[in-house]
Amino acid sequence: QLQLQESGPGLVKPSETLSLTCTVSGASITSDNDYWGWIRQPPGEGLEWIATIHHTGVTYYKPSLKSRITISVDTSKSQISLRLSSVTAADTAVYYCARLSYASGNYYIDLWGQGTLVTVS
Amino acid sequence: DIQMTQSPSSLSASVGDRVTITCRASQTIGIYLNWYQQKAGKAPKPLISAASTLQSGVPSRFSGSGSGTDFTLTISSLQPEDFATYYCQQSYTTLPLTFGGGTKVEIK
Image 1 (cartoon, rainbow over the protein chains, first blue to last red):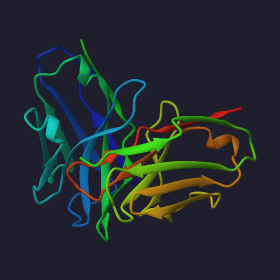
Image 2 (cartoon, chains in turn cyan, orange; image 1 turned 180 degrees about the horizontal axis):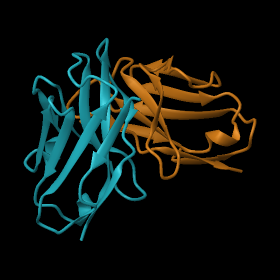
Image 3 (cartoon, rainbow over the protein chains, first blue to last red; image 1 turned 60 degrees about the vertical axis):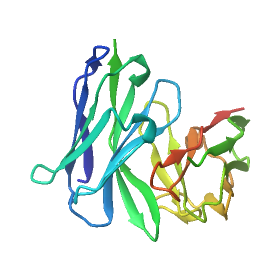
Image 4 (tube, each protein chain N blue to C red; image 1 turned 135 degrees about the vertical axis):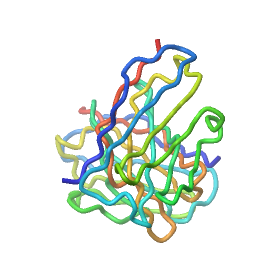
């Protein structure tokens, strides 16, 4: 069954580094038309894209977060990882792992993980 | 960054009503516009890609239209399971991808 599963600490202290892992099952992480990313949603707010990676290592980061974010892929484990440094309360959010399917110039999020709440406190 | 503005931010409607949600881009984005449905406490669900392509399993009462800067999501006959928040997302620029602020559809 096609599935994305996020894992990581639910509580992170201010100024520390948030680390999350997404495990992909039921799909190849090395498909050329698939990109993998992280999207977050602060409590009661909207969706915010933060980073995307292709299995070849090409990365895209939200400019305002670029200095603090690292996204990586481990194809042998079918995992995508996110590290966000120097966190503050503003980074408290549900973090979703997602697959972005690329077709005819359009990046479309066709698969979402269930999300994991990370609280900075 | 391309800004995406949804309107209204919320609406109240009854079962059977026709509902239209608008998404406007701050610059032209062709048809690189996608729609998602999110129910409380759940991950978003893909509805429509490339402005008007209905995803597999999505009921035909949902439809999308538009190009350039103005897009609409229409629910032709609102059903109880459609009460949710709807988001648009542009991918004209991959850096950064941006979402609209969301439209919450509530029961009247």
